[in-house]
Amino acid sequence: MRRANSALFGFIRLAILLVLTANGVSKGENIQTKNEIDPALLKNVVANAEHALKNLRVSFNVKGQLWNEKSGKLQRGTEARGTAWYDGIPGGKAKIQFDDLIQPWINGKSDFFESQSALAFDGKFGLQYDKAGGSLGSLHDVFSGRITAGRPILLPNYSSFMTGWGYSLYGIFDFSEKHERLSDYIGPAGLSDYPVEYVKSVCEQTPCIEITLYYHTGSGEIFDLDPARSYALLRHEHFFKSGLTSQRWLVKSFIEAAPGIFFPKEAEWESDNVSNPKAIVPRSRVTYTASEVIANDPAFPADAFEIKWPSHTRIQDDVAGMSYVTGQSDAGSLK
Image 1: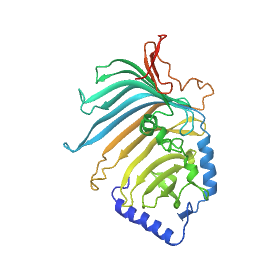
Image 2: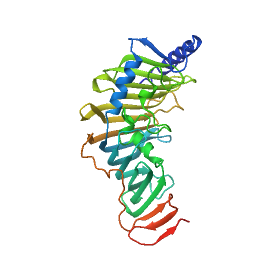
Image 3: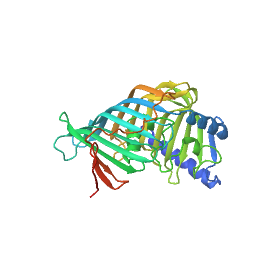
Image 4: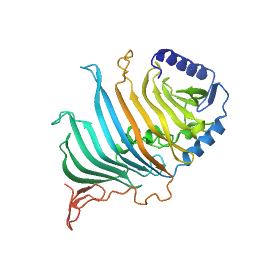
């Protein structure tokens, strides 16, 4: 964390950006402040690491906390337990199955809403299934499904914080519109419109390569990669030009899910209390752990990204413009 010297770091970053711009550093130009790094070589090795993942299954557990203004403390937030499947491509096929999902219920019947659900993208259609839901500890059957064109909007959001995918080298930009990979921003032909800085550094006592993408506002993103673990992502931060960190993903331990595939086993996401720069605790925190991770499985099921609707599930098919109940022959138009 860099909270203690955030203003100083922000000033240094902004000064670097202003100096570079004044001296004619152009779009995507690569800079090194110390420990020379070859951006072209780095681009190749990171791209090779990214493309080494072919499929993934992860069993996850998540506990979240939210800042309570009245009590001045972090309180219970979202909690989840389930399994996720990915085809290894940002924005690609994916499915998340929640065996249990507990979320704060704003203006609800109780403080928390509990549910069992699944959502998926099979490469063409979005699939959402709600099995059960209700007040915490009082689940009732729902059996409701929905089919949409494209990915469900919540799929990348959940992936960013809950399944480990967003903490990994493979899913950093899964939520973005173009579904880039980090390697797309590295090197002379990178996508960045502003300078990219490369530094050999130390992250949480681990030697790493720190990549900083600067934006025209002086803000940007930092990515710390571990060369000893196939350039696994150790840390990812968003920072303002003031030096304040708006949010950070920090990986604490890894599972080698297949030879050369290092996936987060324990990680943490934090959103800083930017409205109060002197705050010691974050505005929100999510702690992720994985109990099992399997990658590049030759027996990876072909139907991993499907949702098999149970009998008597009411389906809303936005693509076909119909609604129907599984197990019944009649299907009516959506109203």
